[in-house]
Image (cartoon, rainbow, N blue to C red; front, side, top):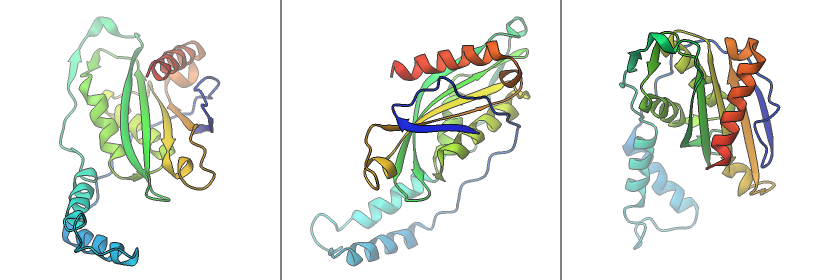
Length: 216
């Protein structure tokens, strides 16, 4: 895994790393009642009154959000379409933006995702790329692991390692705490198969990924 962190860092110049298919990990079980009680305790610890106007339903709302966020749709199946004449074509899907939570500080991170693959007799339904990204974002995460998991999920779906995933993240744990560098961005890349052995294909993907991110 190669990643860069810095103000407005781009994808250009990233080195390709190999990936291999692996099953997605199931989401955690959420005890919403316990979460609600813990939020009430947190408000008290922060010097607030959970019973005051404005906070009365806050623990319930927060518990409901955690339940929704950590329960992404894992049941959706991949839709692939036979297209035998497209073998060897580079397909890049960008413009996908998902929210996740940094597992080190439990603060949000926004991840802009671009994926690429080389069809081998079939193409993947476009909406599935967004669902894959959402599924792996809906948990406590780090960007590097998220990038790898999306690549492995896609590789398992198409039955090939000819997959590349580029992610550009904005991390509130860096923007609003610590060094508080609001312009800092982190770029990560996971790639395998032909993307690791064919420099032309790799550069084509990086160029399209960079264009996708720049246009957002």
